[in-house]
Length: 193
Image (cartoon, rainbow, N blue to C red; front, side, top):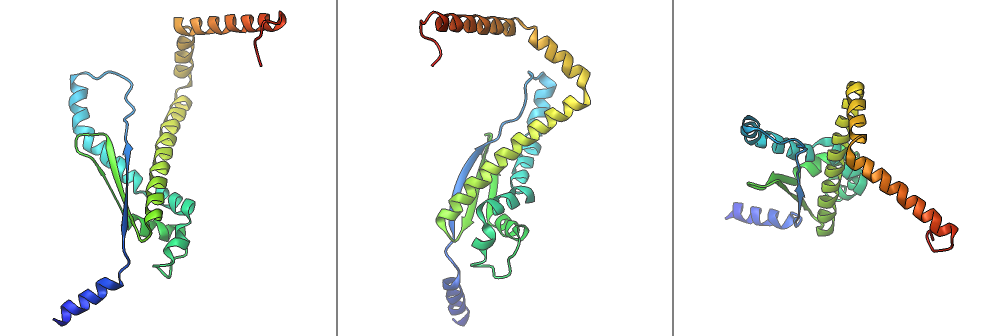
């Protein structure tokens, strides 16, 4: 009876926790068709790739960026007296988030718990936004790095692309449009405003 009374008393002292949920589409950057062997590897690679994306979302840089963006140090001081840095706030935040891939999809569900319902929603949205920004930064870094490693190949492929018939058609259309606009302005037929 005493244990029940103590646990009930302790439960009343705990703050209410609210959960916000957001969903993120995780797209793989595959630009080439796969043959049979690659398809088999792709299926077995599923858990590795998407599991890695979940861990990136929960990584310290993303959590610290979110903490700084939302000033979580001051927010968490209400319940954690000794907190002073974004690194500490990121540690608290990590314990309050759950991220998992939804079965048979490319969707990651992210749940964030907080004592303030509006703040839990802000944190969930900021985490998703910072994760997406980081994913794009990774893609651009890899592309930039490849261009630096293989400049001759990159220049050759760009040259081939620029000689493609569609690019030539686009350039001709652009030139024709420019000439037509200039003539329209010259002869007061309308044109640029």
